[in-house]
Length: 423
Image (cartoon, rainbow, N blue to C red):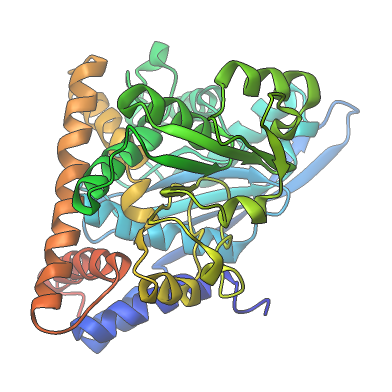
């Protein structure tokens, strides 16, 4: 069972499925099943008690045929190489599907940043960049924030790299504060991109978003913005939300002020108080009778053990890898439209592309222009995916949206490798 839920095995299985459907060249398939480059580093950090503690860090550059590697950096105590490899593969397909000039990468450090003071956190951040400076750069590999890393950490990393190369290099890192040329509009771009996908999918399914009932698993950055944006943009009724400790369901809809109060006073959203509210588990949230389910937490939440209990008409994967391949098949058979993660949450990397492009040209945009460009790119990605799916259906072969999106993304990367003479 542990191997079944290994994220990199899942990423490979998803690729294999698409390769079989599209008839991918065997040489290209072999190249794309493994990362081109895996870097493991040791980072010594002097802690507050004077001791030097060494932390293990990773950077995986999965494929750079279409441009510099691109992907976040996680600081997490349970970080491991298989997770980083899987995320770097998904970043490859995410950038390709969005048709932006990046390949895929990902990084991480095994640590618990919650136990660090600011000085230790800065030392670790700068140490990570010193260890990897020869392998990154605006035209080589462009990191960004991810789990437990912040715009401030990105600013320290950018500054360390700039010190090493001897000049300002703002484009080496994205997700920076706006004071050091981060992008206006970047903060909620992941969730906003997801909302654009939700809008287009709802149109296709004739779901009235103003009347739709939505459940959101996860109340972190992506989940919170999914809650606020779905209400602000469409007037949707978010009836359930959860965090790592549990969740709350209210058929009348949830109130943001009360959610924030519950988090502030009780530490968890299940402390939410209202007349009809009831506590639910994360597992129960996934099985609610709602129109739209948004997994916005962690991977492997919908599996072959619970996929048959999902009642939503539309699943919007805002998290990375929340649906396993076996569950994907079950949802497809149930005619539930499951929009894949590397389409739904690609707003984050599209926003990073905008920031990188602005840093490279020194031409900067205001938020409305940023959001309009994001809408244009991600809406086209949705249309490309659904058009290819319809094309296969017209030939008598029904494929899930994830397989269609994979075929588009893999085909673009394979063609770039072929043009470059890699096979």
